[in-house]
Image 1 (spheres, rainbow, N blue to C red):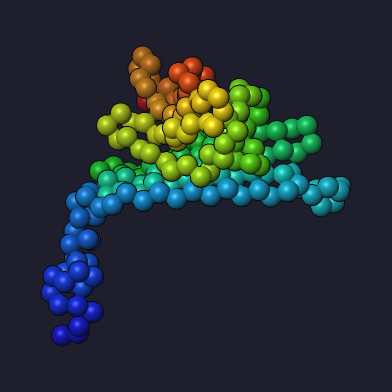
Image 2 (cartoon, helix red, strand yellow):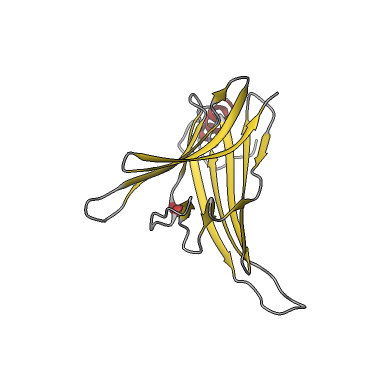
Amino acid sequence: MTDLGGRRGAPGGPGALAASLLAMALGCGPTRTDSSLAVVPGVAGAAGAAPESVHAQWSYRSGEVDVDADLMTTRDGDDCRTEGRLLIDSLTSAAEVHYTEPLACAELELTASGDILLRGLGTGHDWSTEPLEVDRDRELIRLGPWTSPDEPPTAYRFELSAPACGDCSCTRLVRSAGGVDTLLELGRDCD
């Protein structure tokens, strides 16, 4: 028998590894989050022209569900569009991928500083540094709250959900700023 670095049941040994794998398989594993922001400057010129793009990614990992959220704004001259993608992979159901239609930046924009502008309303914060939170019971994905250092301070939060609307579900993004909500409808899904 090969020794894998510890006595049976010792911290860090094979017993701990087996317990960790079992906990993850049963949905009791630790939650991990990660995020990033990438800015690709535009390239001018007729032959090699390329638009500027800003791309933020957030990930959430738990023993019950993995969630990946992407938001990308592309600016090409006067044309500015934002697109989103959401991947939800659960132990109890097949993976789901959701996309937004391209939205004008007047509706939704990710800036090079990581701020998310909803209907032109900014926060002055790099949201790519915030961890993604997932509330499976309420089917809610959240960034924040983050509180501005302004006087008076303002608490900001973004929430993505798909509540029922008739026989459909209506995906929406809500920006909360000091108790004032700004809503962006992202589409209807009717089975």
